[in-house]
Image (cartoon, rainbow, N blue to C red; front, top):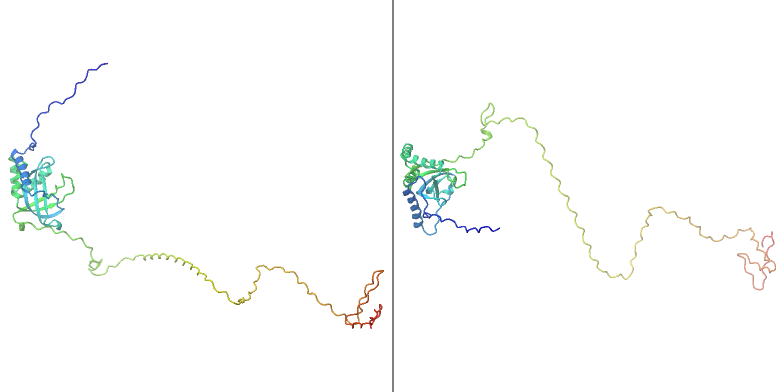
Length: 332
């Protein structure tokens, strides 16, 4: 299907915007808004190049300040009017703040901020005068402008107790009081209380006695013995000495006699075989015992000549040996 072609979208012509200058706040006269804008321009035009204005917040404490300037300004964030305080600390419980310049923006938007501004006006002109001005139709911005013109160049006390870093509430607890032309007319700063010290035992009264007397302490259980210290770890064994290098020695000319080694007993007794008796020489035949008869020769062989007895003289050459004794006959 063919759909009708859509026409291009062009936004409607917007109405002409007003000039860059914002509209004045509700309740503020056009002259006050113009004066605030002019104050900002005068400050920018008269200050040296690139010299920032100190807007640091002072530390919590009690201070004596000298107000160098107080005037209406429009805020850079949303163009709201506020009363800007610029002052120098002449005396303070915070020693680091003495001689420093600070700024304080007194906003005029909510109830708490309007109450701070009204308290400053009451401290300067009294509560009845401020109430009458409000009933007659004086706006907060008119009163803030009148405050700025009056307090510039005066001395006053400042108490800071802020508890939030938010832009809307960081400067709430700044109480300006006691506006004077001379700093010597300001009330003295409060002294910080010294830390409480525990009373000494000698100053404590005893039950039924006077201070300075020793207090009878109740019986106490014997103190627990301190735990024995852990034994020290045993020292590590010393490393074995390195073996000395062996140096070759010259061989002695004569062999060295080795000492006889002591016999070592065997670990287990070993059964030894019985010693065999050594062979002994045959004893001489006793006198009167006949010699053993020689064995007869086998048949068919001649008998060998008889051997002379042991110890008998050998026969001479050509002499016949003596005949062998007969059985039962003793030798001669």
